[in-house]
Length: 289
Length: 346
Image 1 (cartoon, rainbow over the protein chains, first blue to last red):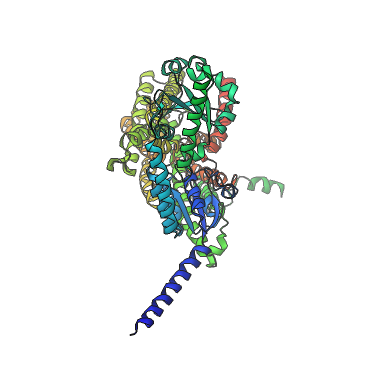
Image 2 (image 1 turned 45 degrees about the horizontal axis):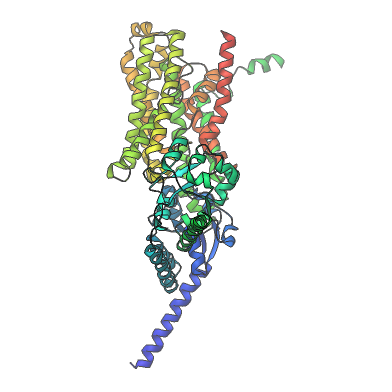
């Protein structure tokens, strides 16, 4: 058997394989569950037909414009099936698990991407999504660049004496402050500032006196949270806020919570932006004194 | 002609006893409801296409993997909740007794929540553990409520203290649930919130099969108690004179009810008011005899839950309304109406 013949045969086999796989992916209807997964698909530029998403997918706009099959954590099998999907790519906290099991029983391919909610898992998540969309190379490149950004961030000197509080607010609820074991806490640590409420676990409502005691020097909130609260003035009117350095100086940083806290491909850049904003805020402060 | 017509009105259409007619009527209605439920949903699945084999693969799979286990679970849970409501009302000789009102369901719910928070992730945190937790929760509440009822004897004082005990247990369980939600991890909180309002959405074949088997045992224990429950209505001393072993009867009804309700809560959460509403309506229609009331309540409960769940799946499709919300919206006003009517009678 000549070498050329082997080469020609393997080339043909490769071509056939590529065509079938490429064709299969192109013909499949995907449902994406989880904002971070959707952002990763977009960042990879995956050429797949996404027909629906869940409520947590808010970015990119083209994906957010697709019909929603409900809230990620309270899915129903028939809602997902109503868009006739072939494949479901789901974030690890999608559920209930029974619903994913039901989807598989009906013959839908369900891939769950388990990733712990921390920064180090972002690159791994990108590689896994890339594998499912057959873009391993693009995935490796993106993962490497994200890791590099995070490493540069980690190399920055900490900002001593800066104590931030992150306020989570949804309309209708009392504002809650992020303690440890939250995405916001991880983000604060990553940019080199202290979480003023780092000794408390989870998101909690805190008393006015606790605000005075922990004395945060700045407040971090998302635009959505600020809108739900009724604007910046309403924030400074919260009980106890005037007793904090942040409240007295009205130091507020507004962030894109989806990008910063979603632990998707946009997160490393957002962390950098947050760090720059904090430096700018504190820097002007020092100049004016 | 006129005489014979008015005479005919009192003659049954079919030569069947009243019991047989009522039960077969309810069974027929249940079968129709199941047919309707199996044809409706976010996805259109034509029952005719299923029967003549022209349905596509997806429709068949959806029907077999999603609809059928869910419908069967609805039948079992509905029958269990309404049947245990009827049995408890007979046992307490009190038309307001019901698994949710007396706190049985919230006791089961609290224990399941405890189970999730303490053991989730471990081997013990399996589905069977969840069943056992639900059973123990319902059983312990049952025993507390029963102790109070026993101490108070009969009469209106007992009715009042039963309702107050149920209120206290519901409040306590609510507070306990709050404490658990406070200390639970994010993952556990998510799982806890699934018990917020009852839903049949998690029906899988493997859970439904277990539920069907255990609930069948519980229902059989209740049906077997029908004659004795009738005797008990005469008052405990008269019933004793007639040869009734009241302690054994109580034990059997309490165990069957706790087993069934605990299981239902572990699988579907709290589906409110089914146990109160269905036996009440049927007692007004059929009279108080348990030999008819118990099986009729089971069929009626199954019928109501299958209908309510089908509405829950279709009214807001593709989203699902928690079915517990629908039954409570139906049951709440009816309960208020009952209370108002009772006051007028006093």
